[in-house]
Length: 461
Image 1 (cartoon, helix red, strand yellow):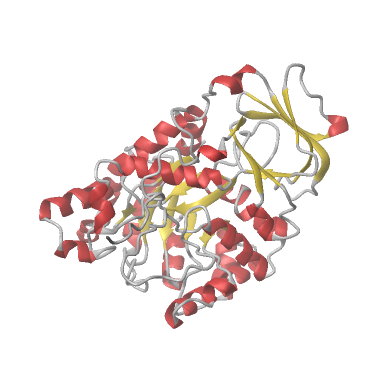
Image 2: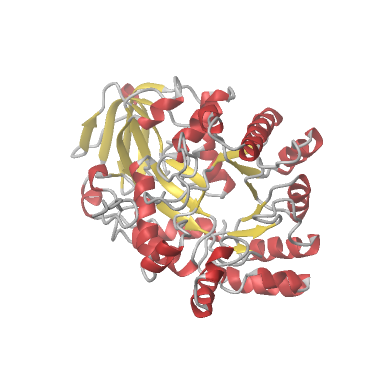
């Protein structure tokens, strides 16, 4: 069992108040359990102490005496949705960075609540400020506040922080050096670009030290961020990062954008390739797809709709059209893909030129719906598409013992829909109810204390 699995078991064993008082049963529902089996009509799901205790046809499942019964006749139930790659603090404009300094964890909680409100019961944050992600994760896991369950990596090992050439170099022209250092160190925690000057042995030691922090998994840079084609770390350094992560019992993923980046990551032994579908200058060749499938690596991909692509610049359209070809080819080759969005809370205030947002992938609470519709548009089988946002994510992060399907013994995370998502991907938006760890979520109250999502443009006097 990995440390991530141990953390899941330990941190999520709590059961708050009413949920512990009596079992809960959903009745008369069509259960789409994401195992690949046909839907169960006239189904019943029983949950107690945060986990599923029974699931099946109404005639085969006994509802315990004293259970709270919720009749959802005509509704459809799927596992809680997951996003393999989000950034709950993604507001890198100077205004937000300074206005919310000291409150980044509150913004992250807001993001987790927006995710939960839209059916995402678990999200994996792959780049953000370590202390604030930890505080938000622990706050949610303790039951002090509602929100999607958070697992996080902290920094992308090898990249500098937000006020750097890797992300927002403009900050260096307007912020004091002390502020720049504060921001960058809050993200990097000793894993910044300086590692690129180290020997592979030194890299391994530093990553081993970082892995001792309370992060849930590791992510490192095989390719550059803005310079996507750059090979970022040597093969020996990549080997050292993966070994250090695995020795610490953590899954390890790489940030990739090129065929060579994918190849070197596979050779290093990564568990997950992050946005491996975005290879702007090359379609992934068949022999590499076969290697990906044979290695059993999981790929977090960024699907988009045709309507979204029609709004893009020529360069961005090229990236996304290549992405959709790669995704279709990966599915055909048997590569396990995981749905992801790279999303964060979209700032409602205009920052520079206004952007046309149609099916925005990077908008937290919206991107996963658009991504599922994008998969439908390239004729990915509806059950396979559902699995990319459920069991595949759980398997990729080695959490499938507890999450990803509606089966006895797993955490009672589920979404009740008014219409069949296997008939049309747009039905994922038809959310009737969200249940996390056996508790019905009060969707109307989310987010509980909005900071960014409630900002308005003030009229000029």
